[in-house]
Amino acid sequence: MRECVGHQAPKSLETIGGQVSYTTEFGSLESYRKGFIELIDDDAKHYAFSNMFEVASASKPYEKVAVGKNMQYVLEVLRAEGASEWRTASHDEFALVMDGTIVVDLVKLDTPIRPEGEPGSVAVGGEPAGKKMGRVTAGRGHMVLLPANAAYRFTSDRPGVILLQTILGPDTVERWGEICLT
Image 1: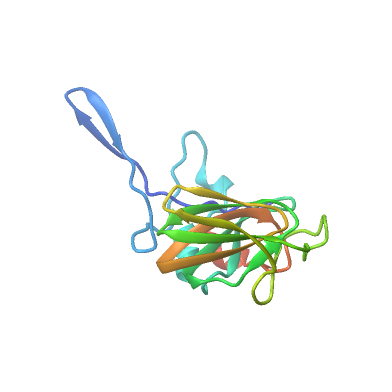
Image 2: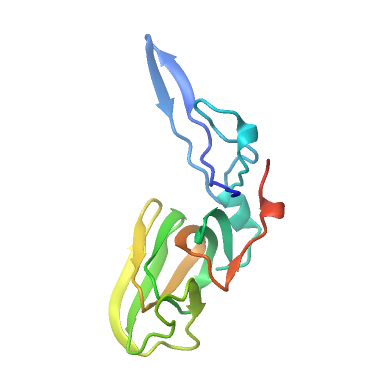
């Protein structure tokens, strides 16, 4: 199994009056550090890793690039920019906003497009037929549930990053050799 994990810049350490203070520096599309992993008690050569912000910066808008994989389950990085196509899956997915502000529109489909048990998400093709479920505006650190058999669309006014927890599907892009540092 190969894994690539997203990256947060290292915590800076400062001692003030005998007290240790940590400052977490978060990465973003505009500010990330390439080729670094902070380990507690291990050796970096035991891991393959990539930087989700670097992957997003080199991706097309809403391209679903796998950065982590465990059997059929994947973490995909999506560069959020403009409006995505409508998508659906036969299973729940989770979108974690890592950078920017993302609006998620949800529609409960009248008829599921993806057969039960078919893995991954697929494009809906045009406007989805069904009842509007609502709209979520999510910022950094917010997670949005994308329910099974619902259509969803992401919109972002400026480039952002989404980490999508899903199942490997027909639109998942796997380019481990290009994105992983070992």
